[in-house]
Image 1 (spheres, rainbow, N blue to C red):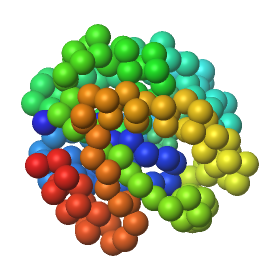
Image 2 (image 1 turned 90 degrees about the vertical axis):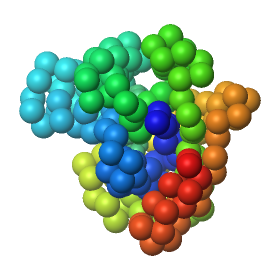
Image 3 (image 1 turned 180 degrees about the horizontal axis):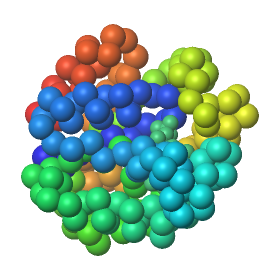
Length: 180
Ligand code: ADP
């Protein structure tokens, strides 16, 4: 099963992607996590993207695409995966289409969360890129660049909406129900 999880920052999609991937026995592919790894390991790529991550902006498409391409070429991704945080832009949708075909995804899970709850969650999480200013910036970038992708996948009939608020396990159950 090939799934894409999409939603605003703080919607809990990363947590759910991890849990649901484990329950389905497929890898959780998080480009954000991959970038953070590079930063903490101090790789060349990490040094290149560090300031971008800190400011809440998006890494250039060519870098994100190359990294995802490499990840999906690994053997454990053959049977399926949950994409979390990719694609995030129009060009990334095209790159994914080229890679797995326009009918490559089985479902796109959209996390619906009340906006006020989002900022609160992010501040509580306390990750390095979770300051009030970068949160505001990441919301705006999400609205401008990523939320338009929902329409593209809606037209393909792939989008299922899941309420991301509530007990973590309950939300996982909702997601599993929505994709089966
Ligand atoms: P969140 O779910 O809170 O938005 P992520 O872990 O998905 O956080 O991503 C963290 C950061 O990594 C983003 O703010 C962005 O800078 C970078 N990033 C992750 N995936 C991509 C992508 N596909 N394209 C560009 N930048 C990305």
